[in-house]
Image 1 (cartoon, rainbow over the protein chains, first blue to last red):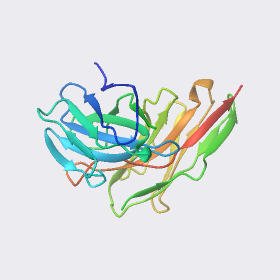
Image 2: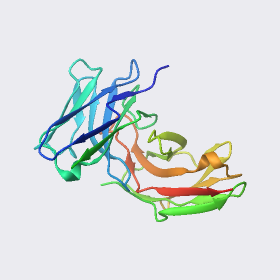
Image 3: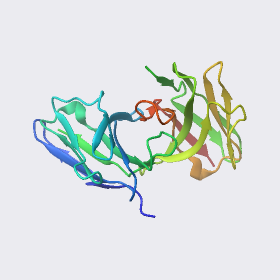
Length: 114
Length: 117
């Protein structure tokens, strides 16, 4: 079974530029999560999707971050404009059903904002 | 709000010995899950062990076991017979039971485990 795929693995941009990350969850997984992991900290949930609907986006900085999962499969997370403090690893995870019981994580995208 | 606290930024252990990583948490829920995840330099989060709060018996997975103290809101991880491959960041995490609200995990800040040969 293929795991959660993410791209790109690394991205370097200048502040005020925009960037997008892509996630392809495990086939059949209805629930998708985006986490932000700042260096030296644990991951923090940004947004959770159930199919193509948003379950929780309470910690998503909506003035600059947006995310979509139009067909209930792949998802894109966008930052526009980026700030220095957005430098982090962005992790995507998926689960078969709505539960924290078994989430599978992708390899993450490391973003550096200069 | 849920919180998870890991008070040991770094731990070091000799290969083949036993080490215990500490975690405390806070939640207003009566049912929840607790997890230990391992994150090697590759950044891939790997589930090490999971505990259902409604189960009194402590979870075990081969060399990994937990000491779950629900009243004290404590959840420590014991690694026996430490191996070089165990070196990584270890994160304690708290998650909700399905059917309720959001199911995202709340993570601690992590403990960097060093295995000395």
